[in-house]
Image 1 (spheres, rainbow, N blue to C red):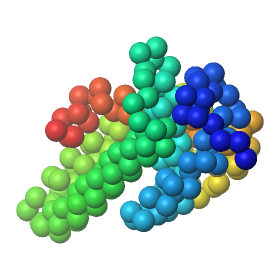
Image 2: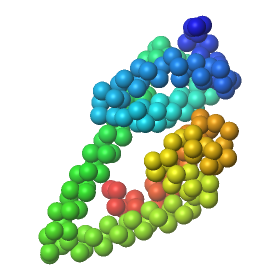
Image 3: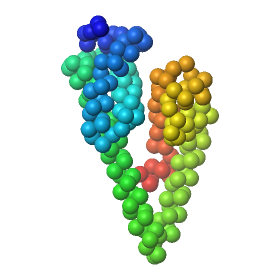
Image 4: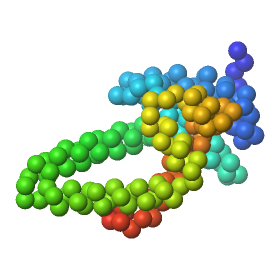
Length: 190
């Protein structure tokens, strides 16, 4: 197998070379998968994190001032690591919030009020979700099921799994922006 220099990889990614993208997956995904699996993750988590890291890199290298100051694998690994640790942190916070919610719901004096506040925030989130395009809503719903990425790509009429993952990432980012600008949800998150 041919090995490419870091410069060749960056330039290939700048040109959106499918060949270089496949090379990056083949060459660097095993290290990311190993890291994720050894830090409370699953194969699917590793695929999602790798995909998200690659998208972050693709955005960064489009900047004319971008300069790779480490090896490509170090760059990829550090971005993947940051993404994974952020996800773990959110997951822990969600579990903590669920535990607190269960505790408050079991407390007769304040359980109803907390439940109503939670329901109000949930409805605000649903309203923002409904502002997404129909495609984005459909693809995010599909990703929440146990359907494989290949099946999702076929279901959505996409030509590749890579495009399905890219579309999922873009839809998640669009939803994230909507949620961040919703005053009801923003107040709840603070």
